[in-house]
Length: 304
Image 1 (tube, one colour):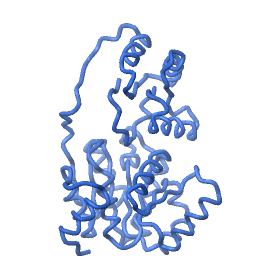
Image 2 (cartoon, helix red, strand yellow; image 1 turned 180 degrees about the horizontal axis):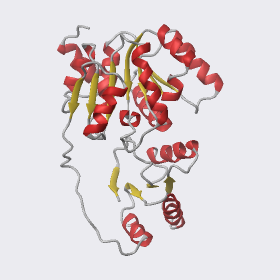
Image 3 (cartoon, one colour; image 1 turned 90 degrees about the horizontal axis):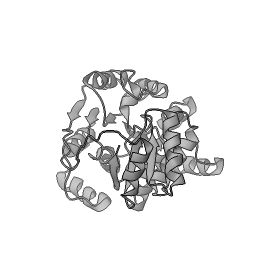
Image 4 (cartoon, one colour; image 1 turned 90 degrees about the vertical axis):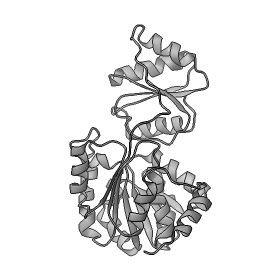
């Protein structure tokens, strides 16, 4: 589709409040607007979301965003709505009446962006609906989840391989902040991306500092560190589920709002704890590597 640069920057400023792009964003967006498939590996905080959100406002039809986590969907949709952008999500957190209301809105063309989990997207009846909703772009966020070679493989993502056959004329965009060369190749192959524009950003983060501290006092050492930073939020990675639970309890017992996050929790409990962290209801997440998705939380000040 034909979009002049002036229009691109007008939407960037008016809808998102920015006057310039971060590295590679503009190139990715132009490829998407030209109807090309895109693979983008950008660091956390590198602005992946804008790469599909801005084209969604400029191209006709609905942009579908595949997202694995309920809290992330709500977080992004809330931010878009606050900017006056017609976005919605469908997932298990909605009651039946609200889900029906949103489906009616989709049938009536009221939304430009729809966030949905892969297992919901790939239901046959839902795919039939998508064919009637004038689909303009499919963006697969956290695309590394499709690869068995990745650290966070999710079987439900494998169903997304069927999208190319079902929607051959719809451009696909795959985005991730974590992928080795082998995983990148696998993502492109699994999603059947056609001659994609491939973008890999630098992961040098001059705003981050790294320290190696000898472990001496176990949980007491963590408690001392967190207590000394009463206004800061952080993530503490633990070696086991039991360790994450134990550390979270200890922090809470000492008056520090904390919550665990690991694969042994029920999905609703994981989503609830992440939501509390995003909303600053807890200051510290005590997690295993299950807490591996990027989150939009600008006040995280330490990761241990």
